[in-house]
Image 1 (cartoon, rainbow, N blue to C red):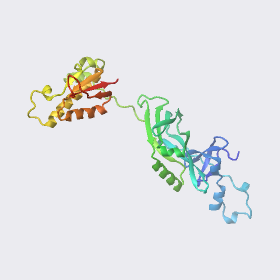
Image 2 (image 1 turned 90 degrees about the horizontal axis):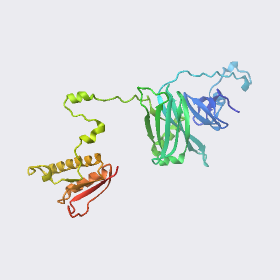
Image 3 (image 1 turned 120 degrees about the horizontal axis):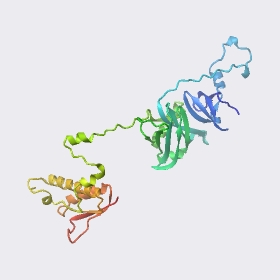
Image 4 (image 1 turned 45 degrees about the horizontal axis):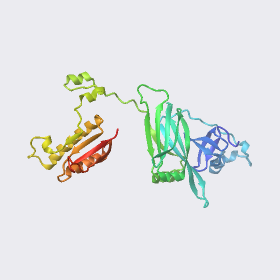
Length: 342
């Protein structure tokens, strides 16, 4: 094989020097450039000696013989930095370039890597989305100060607004740390195209996004002592018996203002409508808490303002299967029947 672990190499695309840290297969190696590890194809790298000869002289002129051969060049010692910077967990997007028919560089695919720059090992569940739909998923473990290859994405898929969702948890749970931490990354095609151009201009190897810097702590327990609430005069109920302490639900509610308050002559139309909608909210919530199948709301005909406001609310209420305002012998067109789903 042409290369071995520890060989110094030159990244042809970015003109950066690095070293080989792993032979992945016959076509790919893992390289490290300026502390960043990422995979590279054999045809994307070369030995750096030619660059060094063309940019600087290895020896003073007077010390050089008339001819010098490759095997006479002293091999430089590889310096491996033992300093590990903890700056969080990242996702790396590495474009794979090729030449088209016009000899222009184009992106064929994007390689997706997770990079753990912390001293903690994490379990993770990774999902890749296109147009909001999951098209690829994997769950595994990423160890401290390692990079994890996920998969390749065809560059044409960038137009479908790719998204990445990763749910992390600790391999060794800690009582003060969160049970899991979910983070999402959504990429707009235009922004990614701009980042790739910037990457080429700056001779960089990858586009990087920080997923989190520090794994979060467990949320604080804001539990309030029940005895303190009772002593302060609040009514405290057992959550398992909440229905026993709720008002009885109604299957029919009448929102005519004279049914709700004794006097209303002094109120404006806005004030009357506010009272009616508040009453609607109250009985609507009670109907759902008691799991009623239907609720009939009497709003009258009038100008249609109250009916319109209630219909607008029902359109966005959770648990509403459908509602209908049709003629009935009891209410004419002055009532709406709501059907719930649980």
